[in-house]
Length: 203
Image (cartoon, rainbow, N blue to C red; front, side):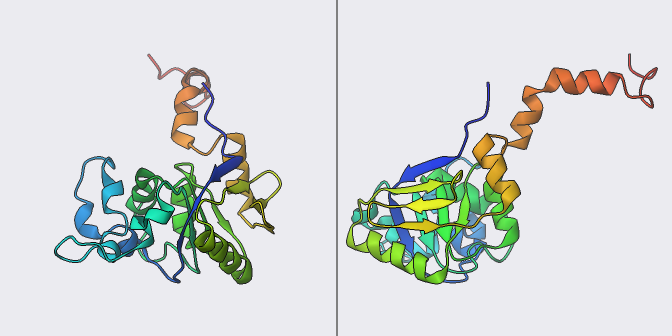
């Protein structure tokens, strides 16, 4: 079975328009004491969302206008800080399928790509224009087209930037390298058995 292609992502937006949001804000370290990533979505942006007594601070993730949103819209240098893979996992478990921002931390992009979350960049003016559109019309459908390198809305189109190798792996469905290896187990074993420096040592 082939991996799902991430060539066209559709959804509504959640604007979190801040710069330099680090991975500790995305998922506080105290919630990383789990064996699996299951349930991490409950703690995405936890400290930015809740007071100590558990009451809401009014974060966009809890704003009824953006309920069901799957495309995060943000500012500059998103995902900076530590390289923890729990950050994209928490966003994905929350329901985020793609992120649009001005720029991203390099390791964060790699971690997102490895679980099928495209991180695409727009210039500052376009990000702000898109965020304003979503704030004024929360149900607006956003399309991220990785084949034609566009972010589209009913009102306007924007040209996106993305690392070409990441774009290709997402669009072609080869982003999950572990799954790709497992799906080709027989071919890998065949090559292994025929390696000159292995042949004769395999039972």
